[in-house]
Length: 104
Image (cartoon, rainbow, N blue to C red; front, side, top):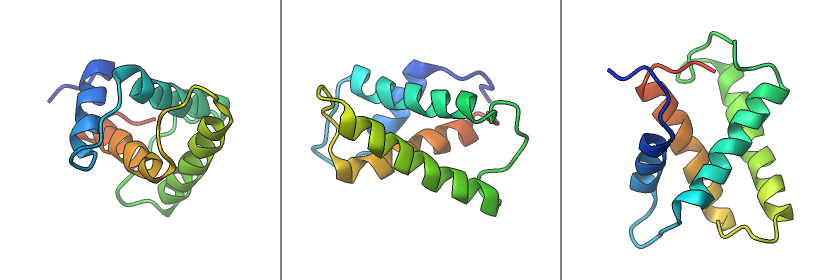
C-alpha cells in the first residue's frame, strides 16, 4: 500500500470516479485538491487522527468541505467544474486519502 499522498494518482483516481463523458483537465481537479488541503491547514486538521468512514465528525468535515469548495469555485471566474460534480470530486478525493491510509 502506498502511504504517501501523490497528486497525480489522486487526480487519476478522482477522474475515474466521474460519470462517463465528464472530463476535466488535471489543473481543474488539482485546484479542488488544493482547496481541500488549504481547508485542512486553515482548520488545523492536518494532524487530526480520525477514520473518515466511521466518524460523525468526519461526515461533518466532508459536508463542510463540499460547501467550502463550492463557495470558492463559485467565486472563481476561471472555474470549469460544474456544481453537480463538486460532491463527486470531493468525496473521491477523500476516498483516495483513505485508500492510501492518509489521515488529515
